[in-house]
Image (cartoon, rainbow, N blue to C red; front, side, top):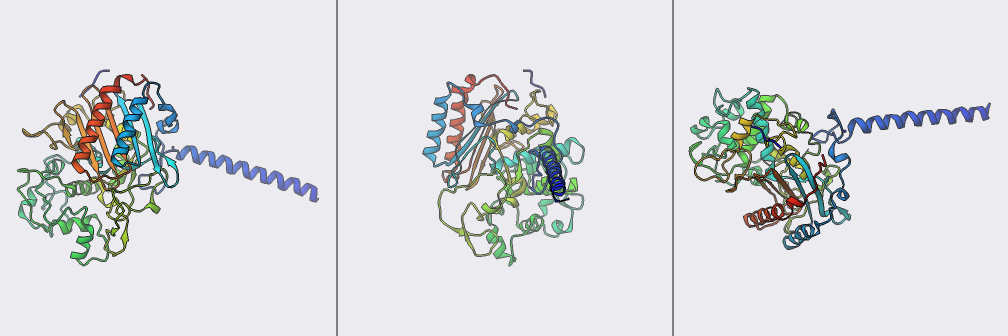
Length: 443
């Protein structure tokens, strides 16, 4: 395939007829409701939205659809990986040239309830959310709403509101551009800790009554000095992607979640994305249960002093927004990638030149210097990773047109070593079983 840049006897009878009529009306209404709402709840989980034309892949996809003769060794390899790393549940999906060839759930979505993982189970995708945010930013660029060189702060900056300008603790912040934030080159360091994961400390230090909203949090963090001159260094910055989320809100005039849903997810027909929540009781329908690497209680992120499970209340997941706040399925994640990969089976959301800009390696050291993607491997693969104490995500687009996505509902303390193991697993799966996949399209 060419690549390109959802009386009493009478009275009883009458009542019976009326009851039947009412039931028929209610049933018809239920059918209409079900059809019009199928797979199309808003990303905030707060109601229904217009359904894309045609059926969704998730209407028919089941694990049974992925039981392929000859791939039993692949199942064993994945299950062994899970056992070695204490992973309760995992999702694996693979597409080739925009066709979904494989999608399967392994292990448990909720072990205590005996609910098995399926290809449509949703889970946190952690920093893979940054890729979604970068796509949204590039849509704004292509629409002429902003440019990569647009200044973020200052009187002529996008975020020129007083809540930001009155908080700038370093004059160099007026030099920060949109592109700097995409490339983790905005000058933000980790002095004082990562603000997206030290919320409890921020609440306490600033004598707040609870966790601040995104704008207030930004104003607090902007009081800090920069670690280096914008554009002349690089430090991985979750806060930089929160700022990109605020830029999206300022320019679009709506919430970050709404814009990404309308500009990226719906055009991509990626129906199973939702804004993440913080607690088990607030999880979305179809969302998994999360398992941390240990059971040690931690203080709640909002400064309440309450002790909670690390994976449920230890951090403000929804507050991460574009830095790590989305939940999704592995196939839906691939569906979004299919719109920015240059192959034409799924229409691309961005131009070929914009896709090239997103995958351009900056400087001599290629890793972690792309826009939205985490790194470009030596073989030319595009890689996006994500890590939380509750979940991991790994996406790899190989030069041969095959792309794999792996999600877990369990955290692992092995950090970078675990990410390397995920990389090796996906490389092995592609090399050993890529050619054995049936020629079909589960989408």
